[in-house]
Length: 147
Image (tube, rainbow, N blue to C red; front, side, top):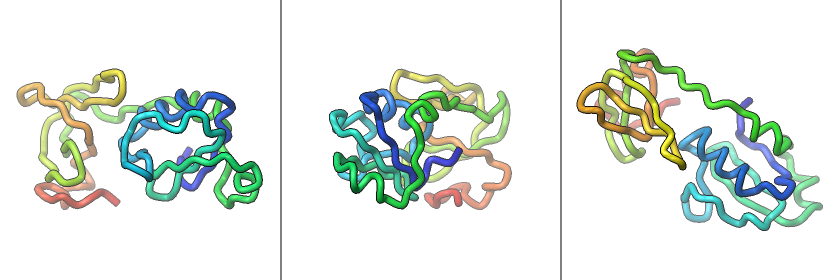
């Protein structure tokens, strides 16, 4: 399920839902400060725009009339994180959008409590962002984002 242009009634589980979103993808951040920590946990509604930016609200009438698709809290919390990479697979890695993509061989992935770290074979280095090399060759040594 694509979590873009959606609205969520958090049903008292805002912190749990936010942490799940941050676990699912590096692109989910708060619109207000680009942070990836649970905030505004007392607010009953979350919204995720087309870019992955999260906002919150507390007005029921705005929530019900908002054009985004409603997603149930349980749907988000039950989502599985699927890691598509196999050991020795060619990947492109970097830590943030300002860095260039580097080609590496994939080793494994660790969850360190608040995000996934992709570990590559060369020197057991860790990276926050990892995409397949195949199909993204044009991004190698650039700061461009995948489409």
